[in-house]
View (cartoon, rainbow, N blue to C red):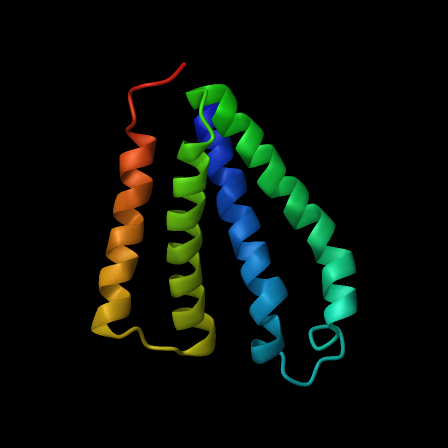
Amino acid sequence: MEKLYWAIAILLVSNIAAWWQLNGQFYFKDHWFWNNPYWMAIILGTPIGFMFWHATRLSYEHFGFTWNIRMMGFGLGTVVFGILSWSMLDEIPTLKTIICLLLAASIVLIQVTNVIGK
């Protein structure tokens, strides 16, 4: 179960980092670093990719399947995106977006409580 917790924690951090990598340009509009896609890809792309890879490995070791991390990654990524977009960019979610966030949270909960696996 410890591998699952680590996979979720790493997935959470990597999704937060990915949000900043892609959307930091809108928060820091006049900063050269955030408006240079080449530097963003070079500096942040490799660590973020490694974190996603590591979370996938840990999840596979826990469940024995790749589908679980795919669904958890989608759900957690959607929730993180919604929360950060709302809190950092003041993008107020519509009813449709709130329903999608609830569905994404449901996907994560279903995958985490999956009792089939190693």
